[in-house]
Length: 357
Image (cartoon, rainbow, N blue to C red; front, side, top):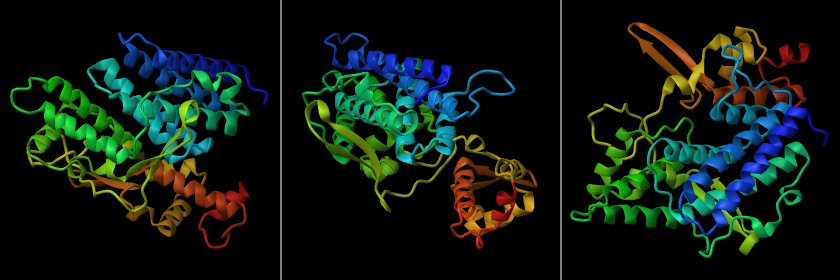
């Protein structure tokens, strides 16, 4: 595939950072190893996403600030325009969360967790190159240099259970290893990025989890989101393929509370709701190229307003302001695309306006 100049440059930077991450992973020097791996994995991911978006003629600069978009926005745009799946986006967000914690404070990433995410990123990197840029990772990196571990990969539930038990041991009286325990808690919280957007690991979250672990709660109650996550591992040696997947219909329900809520809770995640639900109804309609009445009709047809993942009502005094998430935007776009292609064209409100456009 012939690439635009900027896309070709960004893809080259992504490959360079991936090589650096792989070299650090397989290297013998432990000093700064995890830091180097996480920083270069995140940079490789962001450069690849931007290469794909540029190739698809999607704007990657904020029109107001005139600066390039951040990682989270690139992930959302790739889901909208480049076919990035929810599972792929989740792994990329987890890598970004690891990198944030490593760069700005303290995190302890166990070797098996690091290996699963490194191999998972390699798998996604190759998939995205094939699907969007007409290239393969094998053209740039031989299989023998990909991340290799002497420890066989284990199932995700077993990994979390083992890590949770380790944290409980570190928090025992007299151990004096609380800093390491909290670093490991930060890793488990960051892994919630696999199944949730906008995960910001705060000290309030870590305090809450530490309290729950000391109280003897099971990990399934403390980390309910992780209960819905699984891994599919195939191959062996240098040819291992790792994919993170979601278990259908499993996992404990999650209750959201504010950081300063005095109520006891386990690992309830604090989320910036205004960042997640950022689209007013008019803006949503404009992005879909629909009039507000047609957009409203489509929302009613799809049940958007009743879906807590799609809409949230913010109350400021007596005023109420409904806002919509990117999930709502994606669902409505998919419905309109299906209608435009002729599938269910007569039953989806708003389809006629898309055809007219």
